Length: 186
Ligand SMILES: [Zn+2]
Image (tube, rainbow, N blue to C red; front, side, top):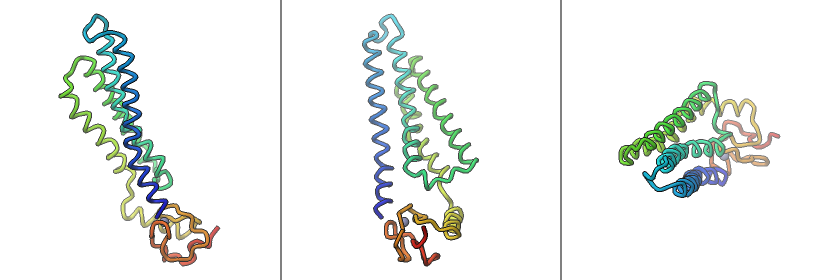
């Protein structure tokens, strides 16, 4: 159970961590642009800073997606199609961020940008999960593959099964009864 719990906790922690990074980036941007000049006062420093900050905030979901990919790297099977889909998702998020940044720089209203931004920061990680998710058939395949060539690690949670004989994984409770010698393998 432990390993799975740690992964779930990390999965949740990735979100505030991404937020902190973005807020840090935004504050830094703000500090630089505010010191560059007051709003509307001569140079385009303020609007430029707003554009950059908006574009930067749009990258937050990519930090979340990257963090999740790291936590679940042994569970996510990156087929060529999934690789392509994730690549397209990253490109789409970056493009949307640049567009939002450009709109903000052109003086677009925050009220108009906010709904798009909210959709972006929730939609991008959600789409990534949809791309990575294994269907029931893929889960069965994964288990079959493990049974055909069992490793010392639980196929569900990657817990170390050396010396374990129970039909259930002691860490996540995953059913290993299909392979009675689970854990006796190198
Ligand atoms: Zn397990």
